[in-house]
Image 1 (tube, rainbow, N blue to C red):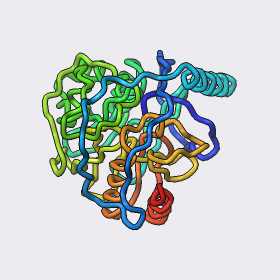
Image 2: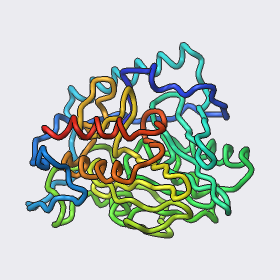
Image 3: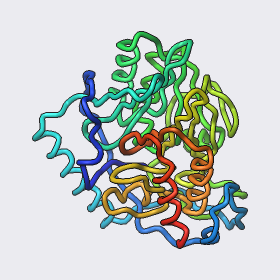
Image 4: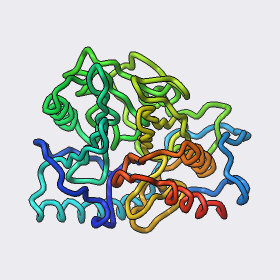
Amino acid sequence: MFFVGMGYFGDYDSPSPSTIPYQLPATAVHSPPTRQPHPYPSPSVIPWRLPATAVESPPACYCASFLTKLIILVYSLCILVFFVKKGVTTMKVQQHGEYLWQVRSPWFPVNAYIVRESDGFTVIDSLLSAGDGDALQALAHKLGGEITRIVLTHGHMDHIGGFDRLQTIAPHAEVIVGAREARFLAGDLQLAASEQSSPLRGGYTKVQTQPTRLVAASDMIGSLRVLATPGHTPGHLSFFDTRDATIITGDALHTVGRVTITSELYWRFPFPTTATWSKSHANASVAHIAALNPSRLAPGHGPVVADPASQLAAALARVQGQ
């Protein structure tokens, strides 16, 4: 998702979180208009493999309508007022299992993750601002190790805020990005000739950091196996922890209120859908995730969900008629 905002709070808060210092992030808010329809998989089956699509000349970056921007701004201001009144100024941190820590911004419903490895910590996504990079490193130190890998699920701006800062303060860490998504991070927003010609959606910010390693499906990052999960963006990645079957899904789905594929507009948290590039690819990617029988889902937005099989099945069933 490319911006932040939320219409529901009750299902998102994690129980009994620990906290670390946090600085109020600087945010830029903008949003795309209503997406245009395009073909989807057969209602009877959602294939694992992504559909081949004919492609016309790809558009450049997606331009948001004034009305959509205004709606998002109102939502974001409501969230800001909510948390200011609560006096919330610290990140929410919660451990799940032996290896995973979920780090949630106190201001907006977006997550980063810290994964323990034998040689240190892997950080996946970096929230909203440079200060979030500092906070993620502080958490790694609090947990007793150094950041050895900096990884991204995709290039939308609400997931890369602390990316450049992390590389600066952890200069020896390996910087790992999906080979397709790396072009967006470098400022190239053109679609490839082989990709579906739907316009890119969401906010992409060019970064200064150069990746030290480009990855694709089935590559290993420590204990994490790379999953290609395009749909939200063309180069979106998820990560399967081979030790305990946790899947860090990024924005392939969200869990605010329920497990929802980002192809589906859900009233409690509609925003990821407005930033999704391809519904058909998003549906196929979550079918792939479900087939791996994950023990838990760690999404880019919403709480971590344990034993998600039935919820994944329900989410896939809801999009079969699209």
